[in-house]
Image (cartoon, rainbow, N blue to C red; front, side):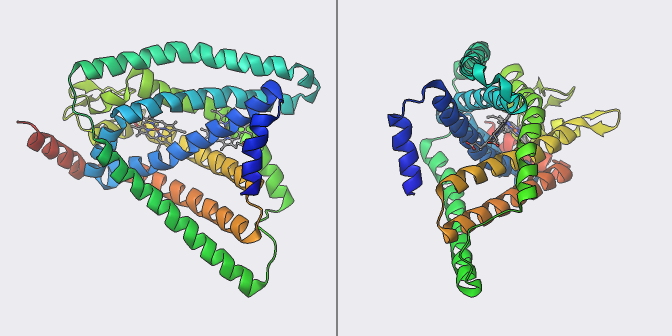
Length: 331
Ligand code: HEM
Ligand code: HEM
């Protein structure tokens, strides 16, 4: 905790110029994206397992609060991706270090250059949606749903703290969580390799969900679902996901394969990044061990849940629930 306070105060005080701000923004943008990802994988699994809950989640994504968050999320991903490439490049060619300040400026310029047209296109979707006089989810509904995620987080961390304290008492183990040196080095390389692979996948995903179609088109009835030749008849979010996951190209469900690769890479990259942050600030052995255990548990649970949804898919029952919901909602 003291280390966290020191980081915040020293960041504001220390005049390390652009390199220091790049480090802060890289960390914050990575944390923001991974936080969204946790909610997103859980929400998306509901398309397969709880279709009515998925409908509510997407309705909340379409509210003004989430729309602001959506712009922030896209900014985080774009900045983190370009700055990540800069880090990878300088780790690969340390002799280019002399140009690092210029490279950091190029990263900011590129981010703005990409964000300006992207935001303009996203704004187009937002304006179209609000022209239709929608009835967005209320703030109370959003707080109610999101507080369940916060409660889940508190339960997992508390359970990990209790187990870690017990483990310390039983084994008299005084050290925090440590990985073998070779695994640590492999993970360092994985962060770089996965970063390069994630970039086209996550940019492609965001292009489909924010630019070509918007978050609002997920519930557009009679609209061809992005990346498929299937029309969303009911205008229900689960039908949108079902269409994407059932789209076959040469017998292969390409968006399921795409999502599976994206899921594995972003979850391991994001959670290992979270581990770096935790290890920078949590030095007490019981807390350090507990948070690392919680991260390993969270990472495995998220991959299993995301993969289970991809395997289960959106079956006819879920589609029917969606169509029935639509029918009962229409006057
Ligand atoms: C508000 C922004 C986003 C929206 C509206 C969105 C929408 C969706 C939708 C509709 C799906 C269902 C399957 C599909 O259509 O392919 C999905 C799946 C997925 N998305 Fe996103 N996405 C967003 C941002 C992101 C970001 C930033 C990431 C990565 C950091 C991400 C990672 C994933 C993954 C891994 C899956 C597969 C989940 C699973 O296996 O159950 N998404 N997304
Ligand atoms: C889009 C392509 C991406 C690239 C090129 C990239 C690259 C990188 C690199 C090079 C690092 C530094 C690793 C180290 O210090 O050893 C890093 C850290 C991190 N990344 Fe990414 N990344 C990408 C996407 C993502 C996504 C989608 C997430 C969230 C799910 C994420 C979350 C993080 C976190 C939390 C850290 C740790 C930050 C810190 O230690 O300050 N990254 N990334």
